[in-house]
Image (cartoon, rainbow, N blue to C red; front, side):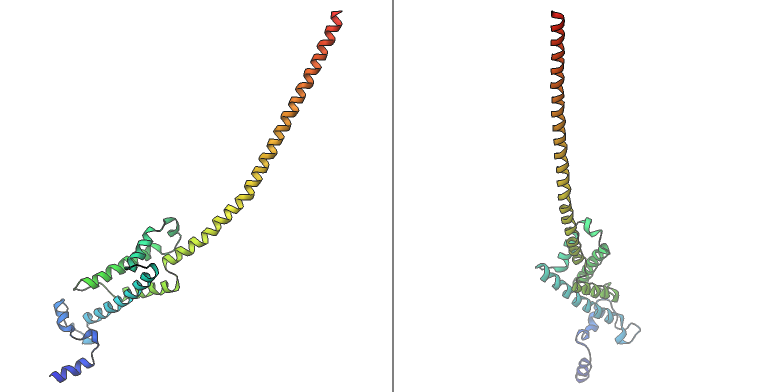
Length: 211
């Protein structure tokens, strides 16, 4: 019997060995109406294991990038801190945020709960797809950085354009001031001329009638 058991274990993957008692303990029957290789319990455990491996890889990328311990949590925090002025312009921002929170929740459930989890192939595929986007620089925070970099030069150009406009406005104000100054000078000259004319007339009348 011992030799037969060793022979069976030799052809069984390491993660599946000794899972019979654990599956029963977690409420999963080893007999599920399918062959042992197609048992839902075993299939789910393999998906969970792959999911955790992928999650650890993604978390390490973020840990190295942000120099922190919990990379995915830090990534989510940075998404929460981002200004909606920018995030509203990024396609899928809210969906990616919800996805990351779901993946983190699922990871915690697999790591800390002994019963069945809701981890499925779709979750694993979503995690792999997001990880690929991160590697390619197509993830939400990468898109946010690109957007800020793209908008910044436009603001700079607007400031440069305002320079000539301000110069033109200053030139116009200077011309207006000079014009007003000339007008004031011309008005003062006219007043002096009229004063002199009136004085001459009064003097002539006085000389004529005074005699």
